[in-house]
Length: 228
Image (cartoon, rainbow, N blue to C red; front, side):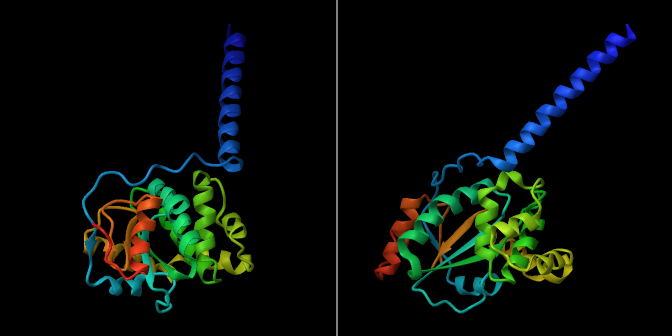
């Protein structure tokens, strides 16, 4: 009786271990699920007259050079941020190129376990000029957060000095200021959630679809006020 029970328990544990291992392998080596849909119902665009003040909290810190500046308050664990990044922002980058300057403000939400460490790792990648590439790497494998090391994401992003990157990640207090200022700014502005997207000060009520984002950017490039 005891032997049969032991065999049963052993077989059950073995099957459970195999299923867990299979799930981890799938998350690590296979593409993540399709990004969430964008452009749900919402109100009209709202203009923030103080939008240029947000640039002080953004990455990169260089002065705007393009006619259109997009600011995104981003959380790297946020599924909607992933959908926006891989769909709408990708389409805008391809369509407008040098006419579009992209700025990112950290807003790691408290209910996302890996959001803050991801923001810290992104800051460290940014110190080597690979911030946007790091975002690309994380969003392409967002379902591997917690399984894949930050160093592995950094290598995917083309970070060359991995030792320096690791040293930076190991000193989170040294890179906390810009992350903290982003969170404080989002809360002070009473934004609704991530991603919050502004284009030349026009804030979308929800993450815009590729067609909607390109429409607004196109109007601004042409010197027109975007349609509500």
